[in-house]
Image 1: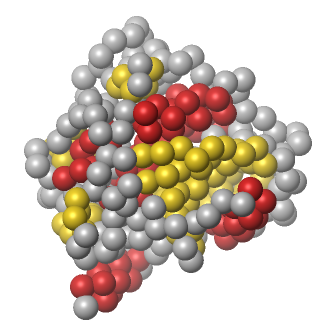
Image 2 (image 1 turned 120 degrees about the vertical axis):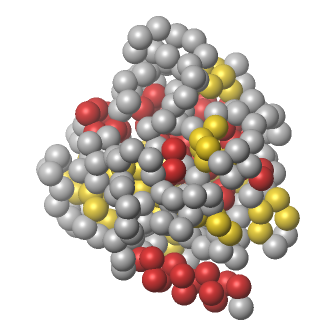
Image 3 (image 1 turned 45 degrees about the vertical axis):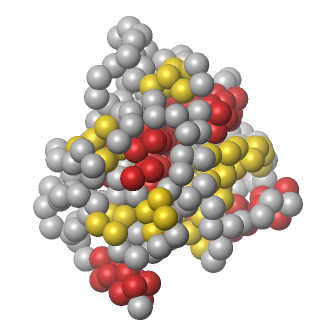
Length: 304
């Protein structure tokens, strides 16, 4: 009965523009949209997160897919830095010293989330792009959500990977590739989002520095375009852990833990202008947005 009520609530949210400041972070099954900087409001959402009866990821495993067709590219360390980030998050599992530990206060009927992450590996997809399935304001090629889903499913099959309720597939597209989900498009409305199709949990991760003014807050502690994408990657990863199917943890306006703290970075730990960092994970430095804590009723960088 709880799942039915939650599903009904999700459907109700899907077709309604939520009242208040800031853009809606969800539309149908498109969840946790990181708002483009020019579209972001001030205080996002309303009140603490509320549990709606759905599942959370007690443990999580991630895979990274880099779709880089001929004629497109990424920065020199883009793939290796994102892979390292996922590996670092996994290596520090159980620690209280980064934003991922804040997820452990949330739960479903089987108990609380554990900070227990693993990285399954990555794959570079060089398949040619299909004919554009949408139009956006910044690029000459645009992938629809359905096209992204289809490519992820091809890559899962090609690698012999297995989808599960505790596994997420991140699709990182090359610089200059746009995308849209419904009427929302990369760099105009969003910088990333997470969703699901069947048993596949996935995140659409456009190349943030395709339009730096939209999706890059300006700090690159690793000196690479990957820093901007890693920030929004953390947003989507944490949200999938706490609200994988859009029926677990979100506030009364539909905002998930990452949505409520988008583009808020808190106190810096070190670095200089343009390379500040606020997280040290497995000995490496990152600039990540904060995540929302019900226990503290605010955005946090460490612990709960």
